[in-house]
Image 1 (cartoon, one colour):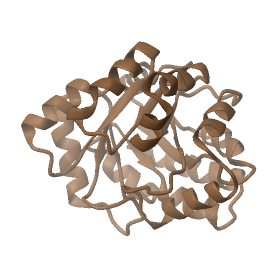
Image 2 (cartoon, one colour):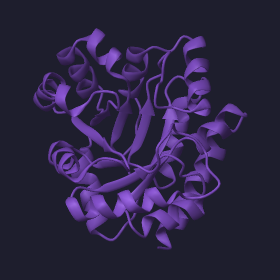
Image 3 (cartoon, helix red, strand yellow):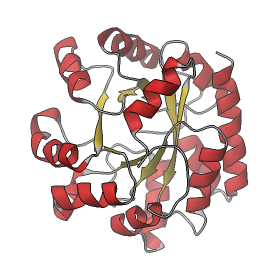
Image 4 (spheres, helix red, strand yellow):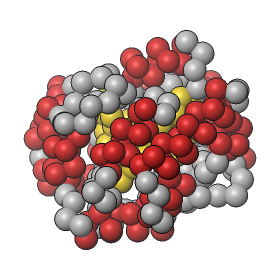
Length: 258
């Protein structure tokens, strides 16, 4: 397993802006090749979405990607087990909803991630107050739980979130669901600045980061970005792993220019 937080900290401290591209697990026969293409073209970590029938935080693009993957027969453990055989040199983190974790069993789910070399988990619908059972199993199983902070998170709660988050702190750039946007929301820059003032954890901003220009703009205030819907729209429209790798390379180039 390649550790998440230690890797991101080392890259950041070396002066590198962080890039975390996303792929929906099971989306087509070549999705593992997409993971490899991301790693080969400058990703610092890779987020893999476990498709779910009711993705409450995801907009239409990720919803479509999830449904298509489910229709192809994907399930959480088929994706997790497949990742155990992927040969990449960057940390992997899964994004899923708590129903999947709960029904699997906390310890079983954490063990499956660890045994397949997956360093972290993002569970966006599990609130801080209900985190202990999962976080205890995750910590004992060597899985880093990434927490999210939104533009309306009050300062006292923000402090608790960054204290408990592992790997990085995920700044939600705008209120609403994931999806492509024409411009960077001002709220994204504000939450980036608030998080940077509150913690030394790597601060990575997602939701609406759609272009290399967006990535470059946000990296002025944050340590890096998550890019999801823009990549998945291209994959849904028939782009190849090579095409997706080229998109990540363009994002990498933009971040390296900051």
